[in-house]
Length: 457
Image (tube, rainbow, N blue to C red; front, side, top):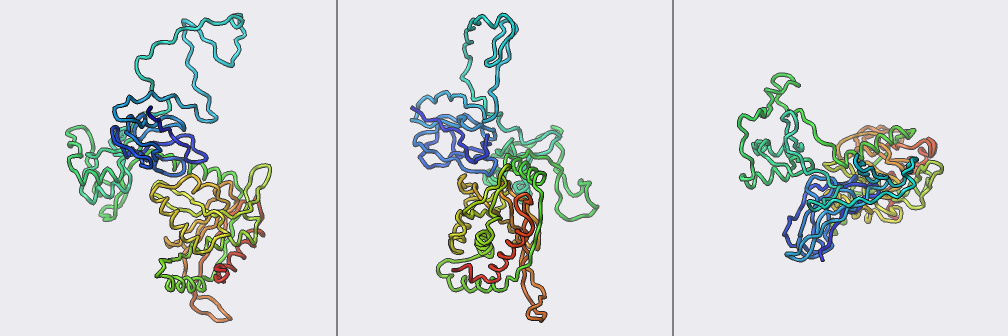
């Protein structure tokens, strides 16, 4: 008997997932452990793994469709086996199942709703169910991708795909999009570049406007030689939509307090260089962020009030420091978590952070990899940002923003000398703790980073 693979719950807040694209097609052999498709959740885009060995008999959800948790995605069985009809998935939690409209000729009672009329005392005769004319389709699967061309003649294409197409002198109107809602993505451009037969025939007299150039762009000065962006609209991805919702929630419900402190990072840079040089043969390459993550966890042990969450009627204080760190993806931002960060060495943190970062880029993070954080670090130092403020990810009560290292004149022992400093900013939830507690935390963090040998014992 064939096995049906359903849409799994890939994050704690997920109710539906977007089937971005299939990596296998009907009739392909499948082994347990093979990746079948890419699924976009409210947290990230991840690969769907098969737990069965056999043949991919039937795909129930086309690429680009949104599928409810528990709804059928595909069936895997023996070659030639008839694929089963998928059962209807339960309605998402908190959403009432849809009810059929009553017919005028034979009013039907609605379950759970009393009819005050006399007919309520008499049992209604059961009407025979109409014979199905075709195999039922899962109601939770939305329509397949729309054409790549949006209303008004605009082409739905990702910025990266457009850039690559421009480099290849490729007419994007001849590309077929396989991304969500028919959006043209990087893979579509690369596939067409490798096989030009995949390009659609040029449209003739279809009213499609010619590609816009700097000469037709009206938003800039004449003679501007810089890159030109077309007017365009793109559908909001599931991940970006959830980010937007949570950021609005954070900034409108949390009373923020911001505190920053300047840290002398010369000792940290010196010890990091010594360790990387001495342990290069062992493949060790520590980053400044590795030390920051370790120091953040140690500072939470010194000032435990910061390692907390607002839960409405009470405040939860966490016994372990599960430190998350922000990773930028093309689709948005995700925060993998280093669990029990306070118990791990800088070397363990470095190894784990690199592995989690790679899994995030490869879309292989499991829900346990990015949930349950009690504190977060956002570092834009590698992008040259000297100072910024970050938005708290509820229910955390704080987040640390880390700026770049700045070479500047500093005063040491009464003398003005060259130095290197780094500014970090704590965004805190004033409902949970006050500015004095935040200042204590930053003081502890500064002490640890300016005496980095403490982080190695």
